[in-house]
Image 1 (cartoon, rainbow, N blue to C red):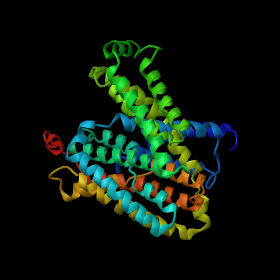
Image 2 (cartoon, one colour):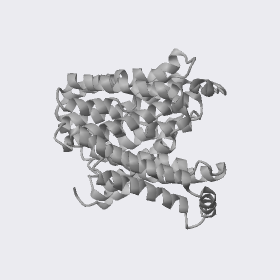
Image 3 (cartoon, helix red, strand yellow):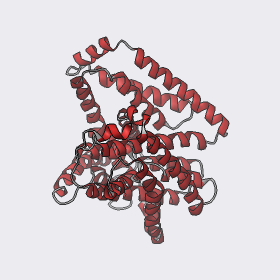
Length: 400
């Protein structure tokens, strides 16, 4: 990988500024997620089109942190209460159906060990990508939004567990022991989070919110890096550590005042969605192997096949978690949002290529389909959803 070129270093933040401006300008006619512009602009300046930017070690490291922050934020949004009732059971059952269907579809597309990689990719949901859209649409706290969040949580955490168990070159028994060891350390961290003297810590967090101390943000990065380091030491995917770190931080802040919690969340989201996450999506566009598709145009015919596979494998089972009384349009909207996948697809196909399980061409097709899912499925899903419906008691009925 080449050293960072000054032009690349300038273009990445420039596109990060340009993407929301384009999304806002076009938002008068059609609501397109910001990540779509980040991906497309990254491809545009990448080696396959204009050739203005190239892969670079420094930007790659920032992109890795961006992906980790995406999963960290997803972990902070987990509502554990939702998983105790009907919603949690149905979201989990839907994902297990997706995993089985994904592996079966994988054997049809590429028999052998590659089928497992393809199956994990097809059963994923991009919760970190959907959360900003739900928040911007005012849906995050509605029954509809909570259902999508539960589907997304299972659709990100489940594939991470599957990656840890079935990929990495370990025997399944050894992989299970390693995963249990990680779970034990994470459980210890969660227990410590419950035992912390929260009153004193929350007071210190509050006192440094508007100073150079910024204690909360520093603790977030400590927890994030500690869990990622543990994942690396145990040879697990780093995203598992990032996701667990988000859960732990949420527990630490559970008793903080609403004002402090919102202030801290604002700062974390500023670092994530204002800096690191855009770098990840733009860099994904830059490194996307568009040339492989251009060299063999017949591969473009596979894109709608994989896109349909994503909808059938992940989207349709997601409808199980639709709130009670949902209309057919709302169920199809949930299916489309549930089938939106990209970060896990990028991660698992990268592992597949590194281990010689997938070819770079197969990776390109899967990642391209994931990009299209981010472009099309949320757009169609939110259009089907239409105007936000406020339902005060429906969420409680759904969890009963």
